[in-house]
Amino acid sequence: MARKASIWILDGNRAAAQGVKLSRVQVIAAYPITPQSPVTEKLSEFVEGKELDAQYIAVESEHSALAVCTSASMVGARTFTATSSHGLAYMHEMLHWAAGARLPLVLACVNRAIGAPWNVLNDQQDSISQRDTGWIQIYARNNQEIIDSIIQAYKIAESIYVPVMVCYDGYVLSHTEMPVDVPAQEDVDRFLPPYKPHTILDPANPKNYNLVTLANPRVNAEGVLCHGYMELRYLLQEALQNSRETITTVGREFGELFGRSYANMFWENRLDDADVVIVAMGSLAMEAMVAADILREAGHKVGVLGLRVFRPFPKADVAKALKKSRLVVVFDKNISYGLEGATCSEIKSALYGNSVRAVIRNFIVGLGGRDVKARELVDAVNKSLLSLKEGDLNEEYPEWICAI
Amino acid sequence: MQDYYEIRWHGRGGQGAITAAKILAQAAYLEGYQGVTAAPSFGAERRGAPVSASTRIATQTIMVVSQVETPNVVVVLDHTLLKYDEVTSGLVRGGWLIVNSWRHPKELALGGDFNIATADATRVCSSLGLIVAGLTVVNTAILGAFIRATEAVSMASIEKAIRERFSNSEVDINLAAITQTYEITKLEKIK
Image (cartoon, rainbow over all chains, first blue to last red):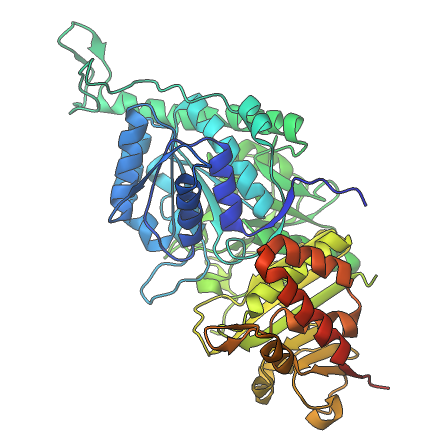
């Protein structure tokens, strides 16, 4: 069997660290938290061993970690941080700041549940809770996608000056080893040019940056009419709205160079003839393919839509992909309390006004590390099919796959 | 080559069950299996407390990310764990239970519908001096019993994986432990 020497057996955290190293990151600031800690350990080893020419800045909290990355980015450095759960929650203020300042930071979020009660295991409540901070969010299904997405994240972020969060499931990916094709440094160098900042804070050329900005546009001391706060917010939204083009182009270019294309905002698995579609994000989209196999064997035309980019949400693409479906079953590893799973809401919103008549069912699964098995996904789809048959179409709230 | 193996490892924190799960995945990949995964049981681990891990080996890329429910091989690094039902839980009919034990498989008197292999890996390791912080480290040795019973991977692939993972000074003693345990493994197949 032909084997490429570039394939390593890596867990998700080591895949992430390799991606950071290959991206020639210059400043790393991170605070350890389970299950992210091995990323920071590996990166500090790289820096210590001079395998990576970067400053590793030890900080006392996640808030400081992201403040360091923000500052380092403003003086012209390519930066990286990683966190999970409470750590990401603690970064919340700086997440807004980094996006508002249009700094192309890259952050790895190793998805973990949030307390109370304490739980170190996987769900996606942490990153979903940061949905509205102005960051692009990309979710990986496996460890190959972690390393590939981190490398692409820098190119995307630095093309449009929007920070990118690469999210991957704690333990399920972070601590699970699998084969990963690690790109060669010279190929990554060809793919990813050095970071060009839009503004550099420099003591030799003092200036104010992100100073108090009033509601309305205003003429500055040099007589130039400057944007008000709202115009700057519009431009951030516009950047995210338009980022689909950059994300898919970067993904296509990556495919041309490395043989693994990321030219779509989501993964399509047997959607061509499917009238029942399972939607899932992250590693759950892998398990969903196993469920689809089982359902296909039972004679159902089932496909899987694996969400990859959650922000910007690819509304038009999703509506097109779901055009032929009569049933869409959305599994969420998060809950927007009082409503439903966040990805379900997005799917519904995408279908509005697009004449797609599919019934949409939502199941909340896998919170706090609860194992989600393909057979459980199969049961949920069968249950949804049955209610479709009985004409029982409207469910106001999601169902939960749990003991209650 | 069997298409698909699900292996669950049971040991105590510090015995190296997770490392064994990873070495086997690496060896299986070197053997030519396209799909391999190795994972700890998720959560907190403590020295001395029961821990488990899993390895999946397949001729195709592995899509399953949920935990192993119906293993076809269970490897037990500490025979005292056999008193817990979850150790043999889900082990498929005709699968292998591999135990680090001085007893003959028949003497374990488990009466399940699976094959049993035993080897006294602890004795092999203590005679070789494969001891870390006062504990005999049987995780590599038991791989000898694993390949003897299942024939899922070759000794050559295991050796390659050991050479990739361990420093030169550690390679010989671990390979000796694997080979010696392979030799003394006792097999008892169900009819």
